[in-house]
Image (cartoon, rainbow, N blue to C red; front, side, top):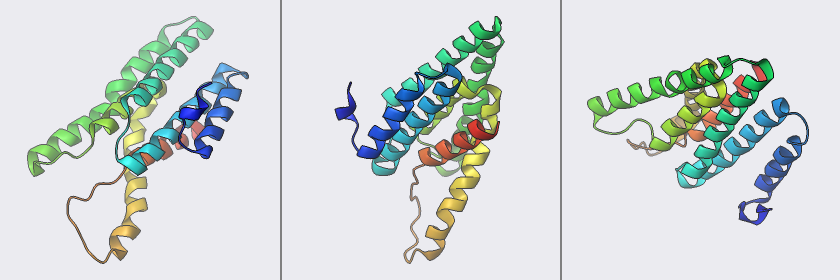
Length: 177
């Protein structure tokens, strides 16, 4: 196993728990692995303000694999069609907002990693992924508002790690939907 590549003890625990869940059923394991990957991505985003392509690709592969599994279990292509519709429904609004923001402000609104992660999550969540961006945005406002209010020196153009808010929104959707 490649556990020595995982940077912190907490991530090792998340990875081990997610791996253990694979022994259970796929329906339980897929969300556990997804949330483990998202937790890992969130920590990297907080530290480095980037989302590595390899981990985002793993989320996309998980989404496609889970959809294929669901197709086999229900003998229908409907889950795969839903997954493919999930990509533009999840990432599309963020891409449009980012383009509009760039046209108005000449500065990107979302990082490319955030956009790729939203597209990858669309493969897993399907049309439900449409709710990720609004939920993550509300969580980001609530999470950064106290810092902005109490910050002594106001700076424009300050970036936030949006990956953790995408993770929290996805966690909410996976648990409650």
